[in-house]
Image (cartoon, rainbow, N blue to C red; front, side):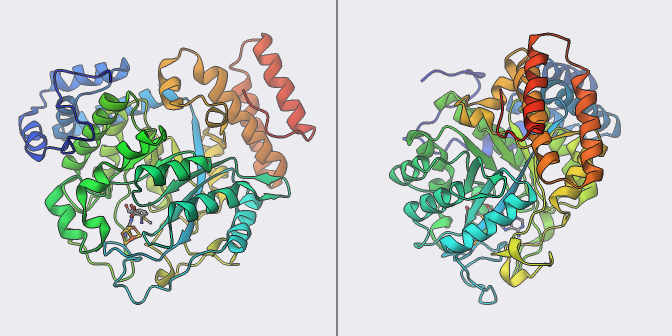
Length: 476
Ligand code: SAM
Ligand code: SF4
C-alpha cells in the first residue's frame, strides 16, 4: 500500500489495527493548535492552493473563532468552492425502504424500543410506486435508506437496488442508486456491489467512543469498531466509492471534525482513495427522542464548520440534507456544499401521498426543508447555481470523480459543467413548468457564453440540440 498524505504525521491502520481514531491525539491537537493571525492566513493560503490540510492545520482553523478569522475562513471556502467545483450543485432524493430496526440509538425514531413507530418495509411493488413518483418529479439519483434488521440482508438490499434500476416510467429512469445501510461483512458488501450501487454511505455518528457507547444503548450498532471499520471491509469487497459522516450534536463538533479528517487520512493511507462524500447532519427531533442538548451545534457554528471542512478536504463532496431549513441551506451552499436533496419525503411510502406532511411515528426524524424538487431547482437557478443530475463519471467508471474535478486541469469545464447543463436541459424539457424552463435556459445560455468557439463547444451545442429534439441521456 502506498501512502499519499503526511506520512510522518499519522499512525497507519489496516484491518489488523482498528483504533486509528485516537482521542488523546485529537484532544492534544485541539489544545495545541494556536490560531495566530499569521498562521491562519498561511493555512488558508495553502488550502486555496489546493493542498489538503493536516489535522493540526484543521484544528488551527477550528480554534480561530474571532470574527475576523471566521469571515476570512468563510470567504476562502467560498472562493475555493467556486474555483474547484464551479457553480454546479448535484441533486438527489432519499428513499426509505424499511424502518424495522434491532438497535436502540437514543436519537433515532426507528430504534427498536420505540413502540410508537409504525413499522413498514416496502415490497417490490411499493418500491416501484415510490420510484415512479420520484421519476415524475425529475429525479435521476437516489439514496436508499434501511434500518438494521435481519430482514434487510445483503440480498434484500441488492434486490431493492435492482428493483429501483428497473423502473422506467414515462421519460424517467434512476441512473445512480446509492445506499445508506448498516455495516456488512465483506461477502455482504460484495453482494450489494454486484447490484450496481453507486456510493455506500455510513455515518460513524460520533468518533468519541465513550459518547458512542452512551447513545447506542443496545443492538449490534453498539460495537464502535465494527462500524468504524465498515469502510475497510467495503473497500476489500471492491466498493471504492464510500461516504462518511457524523451526527452533529452527540459530542463536541470540534472533535468530530478532526475525527472526520482522521478517517479520510486513514482511507487515503490504506486504500489510496479517500471518501467520495462527507455528511454532517445535525440531530433533529424524532419520535421518542432522548439526547442531551449540551453539544447542540448552533447555526453559526454549523456554517463555520462547513467552511472549515471545505478548506480541509477540498476534493471531497459535501452533502447537506433537508434536515436543515431552506435559509441555512442557501447560506452554506456558498461555503462548499456540493450535493443536496430536493423534494424530500422521509415517510415510508411518503412520495405517493398527496400532501407533504410530517408524521413522526412513521419517520426517522423531522425535516425542515419541505420544498418540492422544482422549488429547490427554481431557487438554485435564481441564485446562478446549475442544478445537476449528472451520473456520467459513475457510469463511465471514472471513479474518484471529485478527485478528478479537483486535480485534473480542465475537468470541470470538459465534463462536469457540460454534463450539468445537459441534465438540466433534460429536466427543463421533461418536468419543469414554463417559468422554470425560461430561466433555466437563460442560465444555460449564460454558461455557454463562457466556452470559446471551438470543436468542444460545437459538440456541446449539438448534444443540447439533440436533447431539445427528444434524445436523452447524452453526456461527456
Ligand atoms: N440504520 C442504518 C444505520 O444506522 O447506519 C441507516 C442509517 S439511518 C436510517 C441514517 C442516518 O440518519 C443515521 O446514520 C444518523 O446519522 C441519522 N439520524 C438518525 N437519527 C437522526 C435524528 N434524530 N436527526 C438527524 N439525523 C438522524
Ligand atoms: Fe436503527 Fe439506524 Fe435508527 Fe440506529 S440510526 S435506530 S441503527 S435506523
